[in-house]
Length: 288
Image 1 (cartoon, rainbow, N blue to C red):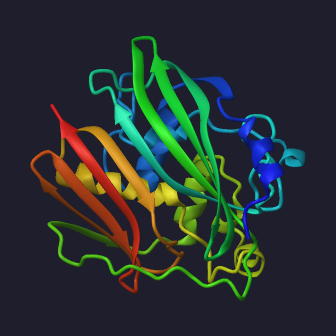
Image 2 (spheres, rainbow, N blue to C red; image 1 turned 180 degrees about the vertical axis):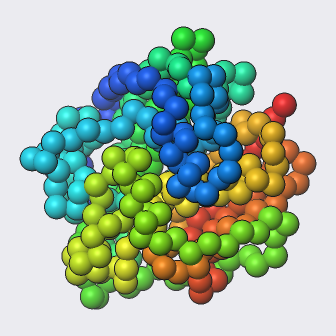
């Protein structure tokens, strides 16, 4: 069965739509995320640079209750296209930093967002739609960061839908860290992101409505933990680019393995679940 052609044509009208948002880079979110991730460092102050991926703490969407659909996401129709598929997840991102101009506490910053592509597919698990949004982050000194952000929309779960085959993760790595994400970690991260997606805090919804075995660890949280693994093992390194891809969900209360290795200025990072299956991949390029 092919995606609905008329709906596809209507969605294509959203291509190129843009939105500009302003924010003030403040210290509290950085200090709070450091505490949430159990990072022992001084509180952020004016001039503190925003670490890789911590920009997600800013330019947060603010939706009123009547603007939110059953899963906790916004209905869409203002900037994001109104895709009818009920399940939305983060699929991956690409980042390129201007190393000489990081966002810093005290900056008055601007994010310019543009819908770059909308793709509909028919997969093993039913209908899918992918939306790519390109974000540019600027401060008074110019462009700081470019981010290609991919969201995936899926059908409601059905018993007859086959599941994707899991991929075994590499075990050997120069950098290794393990932790068990608990509900407090998920709650605090969602609170800092003003994220009301119910699969991260509403267990009854996650299991009954979306068919998951437990609460899902946020994809951006896993990505941030991988970036933190790089920071811990290559202190002072400047990340010029980073590409992340979500492979498989991770769940609360289960051991999460974070692994990585560097070859010259190239870094490979990945996450695995408690059964050894690959959940996320990342590749970074370091620069001067």
